Image (tube, rainbow over all chains, first blue to last red; front, side):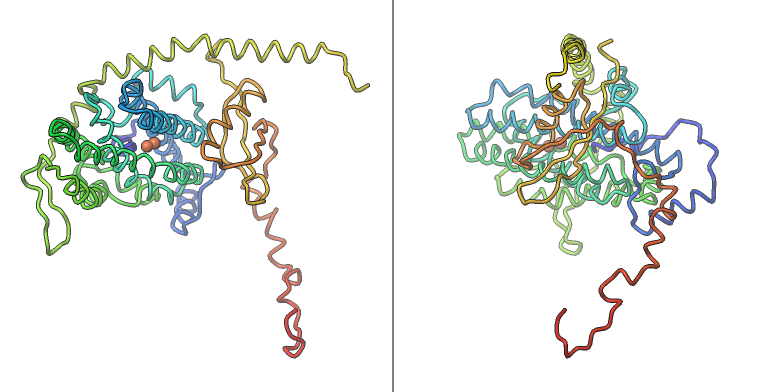
Amino acid sequence: MYTQALNTQDQAPSAASDPLADARFQARVDAEERIEPNDAMPEAYRRTLTRQIAQHAHSEIVGMLPEGNWITRAPSLKRKAALLAKVQDEGGHGAYLYAAAETLGTSREQMEEQLLSGAAKYSSIFNYPTLTWADIGIIGWLVDGAAIMNQIPLCRCSYGPYARAMVRVCKEESFHQRQGYEIMIALARGTPAQKQMAQEALDRWWWPVLMMFGPPDKDSQHTESAMRWKIKRFTNDELRQKFVDATVPQGHFLGLTFPDPALTFDAATQHWNYGEIDWAEFKRVVAGDGPCNRQRMKQMRAKHADNAWVREAATAFARKRRQRAEAMPIAAE
Amino acid sequence: MSDQNWPLWEVFIRTRNGLSHRHVGSVHAVDATMALHAARDTYTRRGEGLSVWVVPSASITASDPADKDMMFEPTASKIYRHPTFYEIPDEVGHM
Ligand SMILES: [Fe+2]
Ligand SMILES: [Fe+2]
């Protein structure tokens, strides 16, 4: 997920922890109190959250690239306006999240540097290419759909600034998913070639989307502390199942077939069973060897370098304005 | 130079429903004008507000969470500050 960070081991040496303070902190979390920026908190909680929120922010920003790829080629003015607004929202989500992470004591510039150096990760899903217009429909429907599954419980996360940022994000996500699904409807009801394009996009994206929720519960040993701290409210597999159950009927409504022969409805449990996920592929993509990892990093670094003059000009202009204001005689006297 | 940390500004928005300005988040900007523009783009893309304030984060003086008891506990014992402390006979009706 955008929060796949939770599944990676924290390497930093654990600061000497104070059992009494930790117990007091846990009692607050258990009582569903929100933890605020200046409150006492265990170092491990601060580190885990900083990494997770930063990774979430990076995912929003990098996620602008695969969709941005189609803005100039959107098939109509309506679709173009919607896609432009959606991509702008994702930039906004990144901004809310960097602001939330900064309250934990890491500056936005530091986080950006970690992204550009490759030290920080972003969601594996954005290392897949958007080959056709149907991929834009799929991203809204499935990628944003999966993000919503993950983000709704985060609105109740124990850390106040993160929870509040998520409330804001969730309000905006619904438009993202609906515009994507509407694109899919148009293609599914279109010409045979359009319908085929929709099917091929689903075939390409379905498995990578399921991987967004992170490794299966039996392999993700860090879920426990994240659940205890009430950062996470559901396990990876629970969220994945919720997503599959919600999504499969939507796909069938479109008349599309999921690329999983094992996908069957279990009448007893009322859940959709799905086949084995290729975790070797997931590990490869997270490790940097997905179809677009190198391209994404190149684009991010180029953007940062190309925009340097804007940051310099803004700083110089502010300085000039300040100097002018100081030099001006005070008119009111 | 271009990478030096820009000051942080806290953003407050007054919505159309007549409530007071409310904290919504923060932005980085070189000065107040840029902070206003960034706040508009970041926090009001769907008509969320009719008025925006930006305040340099460094200008805010906040109470220390460690002083919470000293700051707020004394009010807990002053129950006579609440209307329910006073007994009015039922016959008097709603007051
Ligand atoms: Fe987003
Ligand atoms: Fe989105």
